[in-house]
Amino acid sequence: MQNGDIRMKNVYTVRQVNSYIKNMFAQDFMLNRIYVKGEVSNLKYHTSGHIYFSLKDESGTIACVMFAGSRSGLSFRMEEGQQIIVLGAVDVYARDGKYQLYARKIVRDGVGLLYERFELLKKELQEMGMFAPEYKQKIPKYIRRLGVVTAPTGAAVRDIINITKRRNPFVQIILYPALVQGEGASESIVKGIHALEAEKVDVMIVGRGGGSMEDLWAFNEEAVARAVFDCSVPVISAVGHETDTTIIDFVADLRAPTPSAAAELAVYDFMEMKKNLKLREERLLHFMQLILERKRQKLEQYSLRMRAYHPQQRLNEQRQFAADAENRLRREMMRRLEQEKYRLGLMAERLKGLSPLEKLSQGYAYVENSSGANVRTVSNVKQGEQITVYVTDGRIRAEVTGVEKEET
Image: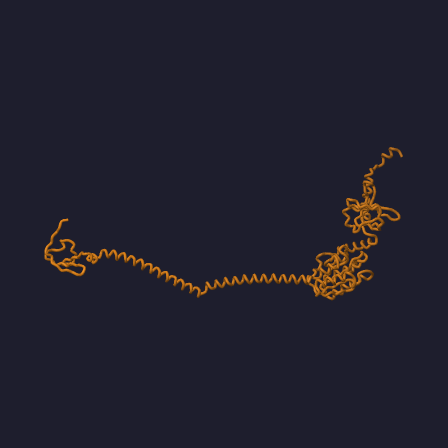
């Protein structure tokens, strides 16, 4: 091939080729969501939180990485030599031109197929609306009959019975001894749900103790999920430990992390209720006493008002007013009499000073002419006229023998 022929061909950079291959991987639907199983090798937990490892089998190896943001998809600590199944996407790292598996979820081999079935059923039931909150029934606060669908032996049923009796010994427990693991377990659980529903229990606990995903698989069956969803009695799911999740946890009206917690959620605490009732009784009595005291005070106020407006009270007030007025009048009259008596004394003294008798008693005399007029000057009498002279102890009749007038 000549140099001119090479120039006639299209020439690509390494970056372009790697990008082209990367696009091919991105457009492949199967490679975007693929399960790959193999043995863990070259495992490295990086300080950044990323996990780098390889999957290998008898014929080859593929590089894998799980970024820190996807670590929620890993529920155990990986170790060299483990058989695992990785869910992720195969893509090309354009810088190095190498493809690798970008892991989103990692499970131990043997659980992977069950997990896939779990995810598919979960998605299907969710799309059907069986997880919708509007279909959830409210758990009654006070119950008398508790239904339990679980194995007749084991820690789960013992925990439920013990906690129920401790919280409220008056609650009746109706146990349906169901198979919770192995062949026929799902059918037994469904029969138990229908049987307790027919017994008209107030609330139902469906569950068992912890175990592997295979052990808990009966509670992931569609038949059990539909029985829980269709049940007219409120159902509390209580499967495994807090970290275990099954399909009926999404369908049930309430999920409890453990069977013990389910009993606490279903059965109210009788002693606590008694304490609350006692406290409320005391508060009620206190409020009643306060109300009665307020009403009593108001009654006393109304009684005082009634007394004030009673006709007898008004009459008594008028009588008192009249008596007070009479006393005031008497005091005023006495005061006026005293004033007038004083004035009279003054006037009497003044009149006494002007009284002719008083003058007569002092040696003076009162003279009248024959006409009865007071003789004040010599011109009031004439010679030979009969006059009367008044003195202290009587009258003197005399005749005027002469009249002499003196010049002042």
